[in-house]
Image 1 (cartoon, one colour):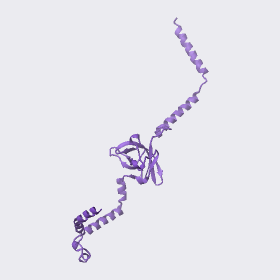
Image 2 (cartoon, rainbow, N blue to C red):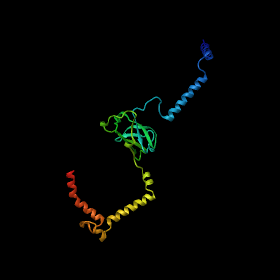
Image 3 (spheres, rainbow, N blue to C red):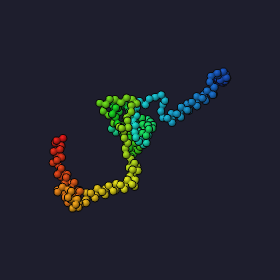
Image 4 (cartoon, rainbow, N blue to C red):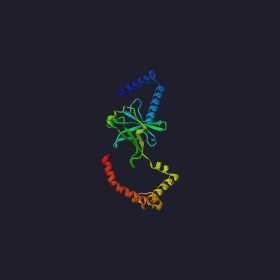
Length: 227
């Protein structure tokens, strides 16, 4: 009676050994190839962050003259509400074509839609696409439609301002302001007064301009009525 379980265990072991000896299915090479394929798929999904053969939904492509600050997955907003994200960008001549999605909550988008790349809040960082969906009278923008560069813009960055106002430009701006100050504050000479109307003779440019504003009130009111 005590040898029964041991005998059954031995029979089970012999059965398993016989099963593996008679196994004619795929060998270790097959399972190694399968594991390698699964590993490659995992790396692909990790780096591309997208699932093949799936659609991003409704997409719009907008062309910007400068879109270097926008990145993939940057939000797309309408009236401050997130309605999509950037899914790609590519060069288009001297411009940049940015492709982004728009959720159902942000649709419909119309043919006269406009877009602007704007900075996010300080604590958010990065940039976002501010989308104006357009007017219904212009018709619907189909999936994959484009917003031309004439209806897009990019916010001016402080770096662009500093690069623009280099030493020569700052010098010219100073000369302009000095010239305006001289023209508004200097008193005319006797010879110059001969060429002026009697009501402004002896007045500086600023004083004469103020007088013109005061006397122009009635003229402006009459002009508005005529218009």
